[in-house]
Length: 95
Image 1 (cartoon, rainbow, N blue to C red):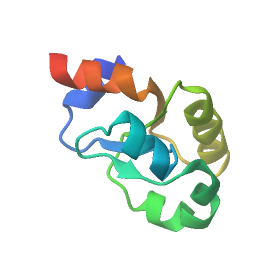
Image 2 (image 1 turned 180 degrees about the horizontal axis):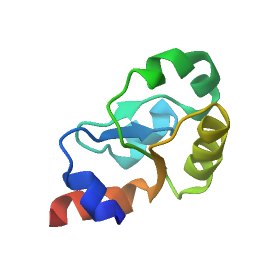
Image 3 (image 1 turned 90 degrees about the vertical axis):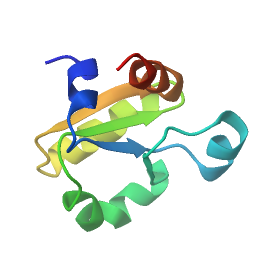
Image 4 (image 1 turned 180 degrees about the vertical axis):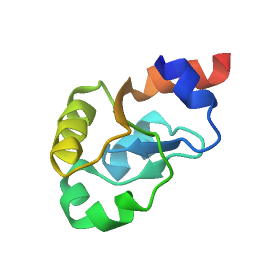
C-alpha cells in the first residue's frame, strides 16, 4: 500500500516531528499531532496509544526517517516515513 492509500484510512495518525517554531513559520498539516523529534523518547508510551498506521513527517523527511527507525527499534510495526510536510499536505489535498 502506498502513502496515499494509508492517508485515506480513518485510523491513520499523522505525527509531525518538527519544532513548534517550524510549525508556526511554515504551516501545519490538518489533524497532525506535534511531538518534536527530541521529545519522542519521553513520549513513547503516548505514541503507543495512537491509532495505526502512524505516518511520521518533518520538514524534509530526514528527521522523520530517523524517528521511524527509532520507533521500529522500540517495537512499533505500522509506522512509516511520510517525508516532508509539503508532500503530506499535497497528498491529503489530492485525496
